[in-house]
Length: 115
Ligand code: 5GP
Ligand code: ZN
Image (cartoon, rainbow, N blue to C red):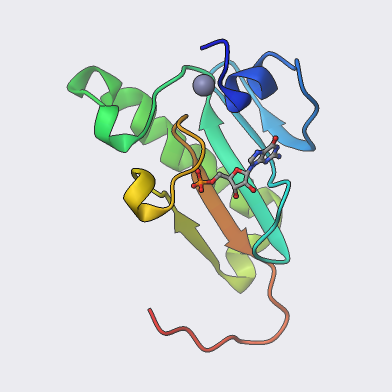
């Protein structure tokens, strides 16, 4: 997609602080972090959101979650804990319509979570 900002990051047309890249996924720091460590994990393939996923995406979606786990392990977030979020649709706050998971972590003190 030519006007998708995450496709532009995939193609390195705009810069991002990448922490991981392979033949299917790329992960980079969020430009406006909502946690001490806030990483976006996206497939190279453009897919608007989880709602746009089909059975043929089964393998990619499984690998995407395992890639999230690897990145969290590599960044040391698995030890202290992290949240994983995917906003699905404008009504849930999705701003970039290229499937992505937010990894949020890196808190020093134990926060009090409502959910
Ligand atoms: P959403 O609300 O769609 O789930 O999340 C989109 C996220 O992408 C937001 O947290 C926002 O800060 C991040 N973001 C938007 N544009 C850019 C960009 O150009 N570079 C990076 N690294 N993150 C971006
Ligand atoms: Zn895209």
